[in-house]
Length: 584
Image (cartoon, rainbow, N blue to C red; front, side):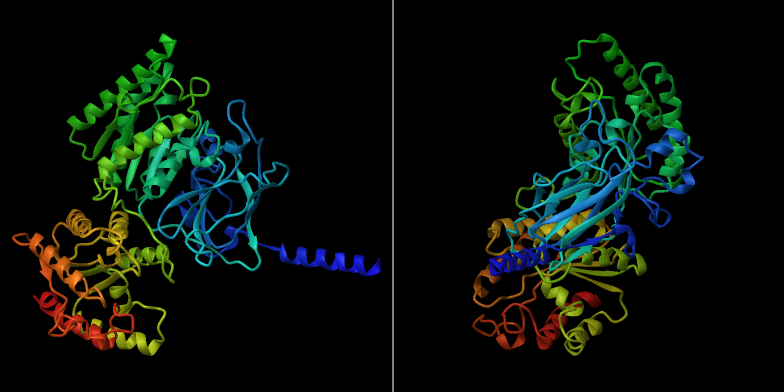
């Protein structure tokens, strides 16, 4: 019996050790890890949405609501099969029309190696006590457990988070991702924008727009207090926004309708004093089937006043204004909770309508193409998103006159951190020689396909500077996944995307590098690309000379052993082939 008891104690001890969790407080990490807000350096403590400078400047109700974490999120990478979160909040967990899972709960989404978005259920251990605990279990890594996923944890919509930790098993890694350098979409609105009455944070329409467009979104929805106030507009103007969305009419119906015209004119002009970012005005939305004529009159009168303001602003020559009318938003009888706030169906309808409008405003190439919809990836050894942020930082630090946008073949040429220092220096020798006298940025990403290049262009890697030349070297990783027709079409889409973001740059479409066992296929594909670009302003660059013999077979001694990536001698030949175009 003693032996049995000792054995049982040993097993329990081992299980306890195996189940140990390491906890991380994101606010204690170096850098700004709280996504979905501005003024990062001023917001070291807590999960608040406005700078401390706003206290005493905005009304007390707005200041109090800004303490609630609507739209804020944490992003991290881990391969843990179980993720735990524990946190405290400062107020009641639910409201009469909104469940605790939305008002005070969390929501976790994952992005896999192929850029596919996945939702993580928390059905195993969801408890609301003094310390709230969430547990996301049995997370399956379909693209290989060792790779893990990029996760985004959305915080409560209607509560203040006072303390939070994320935990994973102690034998797994977790790395938090700092706030992106991308320009954000800024939403100024009411309780609808803040998130009432979503059943969980990810269903707030602002969070739907964020996760489905990939753009950072700052939620400045203030329940009952979206009143087009000058003090708030002045704070908005401090944000280097990609787009401003103004959705305040639900708080300005009834007796406040008369405020709309003057406040909208003044607010838009305040934004225009500091920013030329597009501004989208949204109308008040209500069910077409409402049984209350008074309610219909209220929202219709508010919409009329905003339309009047919009027309006046256009007549005064204010540029970059856009409008989302009530009629096109497609709301049904079932989209509200209590006649004021949308349920999850309504939030989805909001998100779809706004997302479609954003696509129209930005007009990014590829967003309507099923094969090449812009998306992220994490198929290789390096941190793909971190490299994207590195590109944005490089462009800010030193504006390039030449950009090389490609895959691993370009990536390894001068930026391959896997190689030892001696090999990296040898590979980069021909790069440095080729671009001497130029500021040339290597925007090669290992394992990138055409759709990944489109995502990077749409998310800022060709913005904020004027390049003289852009070289495109994508397509080889699409072979075997897409047809040749699709690949050629994808290359044309990349060219159009470059034209949109770098309208004055000269564009060079570089042929796909010959690859072992597919020499004839690649040659035929390149011939089709060259023919497609005939009589256009895009220069086709034949990269093949020197890499194949007289029979068209790959010279394997010029590659690192995989018949795809050049070695030092191979990169020297690539530089020789590109030199006439770099120097012209």
